[in-house]
Length: 451
Image (cartoon, rainbow, N blue to C red; front, side, top):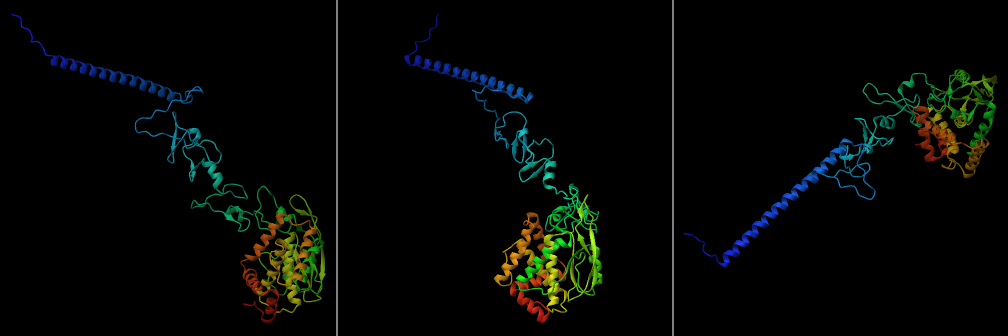
């Protein structure tokens, strides 16, 4: 007996056909996904092999023809793009540095000072600028302006140095005690690559001060007469002809000993208003310059007789023109006070008002027209013209001489001694408030500055 399946209806045949199509579609999708996964794996493997070859030979990165763009870098999942902080380009392959939150090509991490790459393990940082340690030390560590070496640290590990308050010359503290020469005019220490000139009496002079130095009594006469004219221009005429001599250090010290009274500015006295009869050795002829010292100086003893309250004015030789003039202006004021009957003044008052006249003369030379003189306009113009004429004879002041004048004014204004420094500041305040003439009249009546 043969069993036969009952015949299927039309609905059954349609349902079977639909199930067969759905099965074929599902099999096709699975094959497509598998093929896609296999091809993706091969592409990723090829990229990994290319990356490995590049890392093995980072000195020869792959070259791409100019018409074809370089392939985009491959980053793993979650990795961010690295931009070089130096060249601002993408860091694709090879070595790189991470510093200060930024990435760099090795050749792009460069010293801010010299511009060369930093390859050492340690470097210095200023702000966000990297430096070689040696470059940063050269840039930031102070050097001694005398020996030109880096200033050493003290026992506490701190950099300790001395610095001139006006010139800002930095130097090792040891040079204050190792017999390094100091200019007797501007106070700067002698540098090891610029020898100073020895004046033969224990003093040294730098070349800048040497440019305008006055070396003998004859050379100083035009300046002396110009300062007398300056006094006359302020209605402070000196009726007596007071002799003026340029002398050596020893002669000035001997004259100080011969004086019965008087205050002298230690440790170095540069000028003196004599009131006693003495024999003084003056500089007759300027010396010549030879091998960092002055030679051939000619002196002459001179008998000074007293014809009035003032015998003579003595000034050290070898000082720059402006410093010599400031000393002359100071000492002439001593002479003027004695000739006009100002007696028994205390040191603060007498030295203070003399320093004011010295400062005023320097001010007229360094800053002509800057400050009105405490007198009439006619007297002011006469004083100004006399000082400018003396300067014109020297061919005008150079920038170096102008700077020296500012330094000499700084010295007067910042002197720490009670008589010269404190006296000047009190006298200058009185002159600025009441004028020179009223201040002098008050001193003559009371012996003190007006308040």
